[in-house]
Image 1 (tube, rainbow, N blue to C red):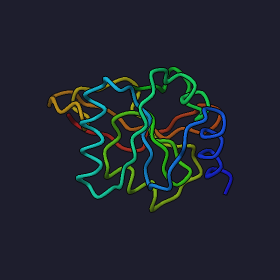
Image 2 (spheres, rainbow, N blue to C red):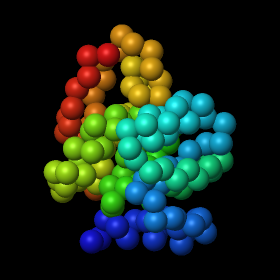
Image 3 (cartoon, rainbow, N blue to C red):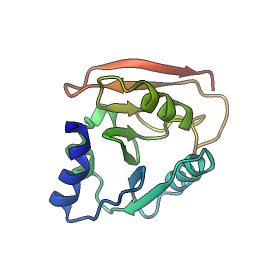
Length: 142
C-alpha cells in the first residue's frame, strides 16, 4: 500500500527509526498537551511510540500537512496521518472505514479536544487529501 511507505520515507529522510508500533507520534519534547493526547490515545487502547523532535516542519511537510491544516503534533498509523488532537474514536473509525484520504486533522488547538480538555469550545475533525482539500469527518459540541 502506497500510504504505508510514508513511514519509510519519514524514517529515511530524517534518519529517525520508525518502529512497528500501530501509532507513531512526532512531537516537541516540551509540549504538555501533546503528552496529554498521547495518554488519551493509550487509554483508548492504542499502542503509541513517541518520537520527540525540536523541528516539526519537516515531518509535517513529508506527511503532506499543509500549514492551514497543522497542529502541534503529527501521528502516523497504518498509512494515515493524524494531525493534532483528533479523538481516538475518530482514528478508530478512520481505520475501520479506510477512506481514500491522507488522514485526519484538527487545525490549531481547540480547547475542548482531547489533550486540551477545557470544555466549551466546539470543533470539527477534518479529513484531507493530497491536494489539501478537506471534508468534515465529525463535529464536537465542545
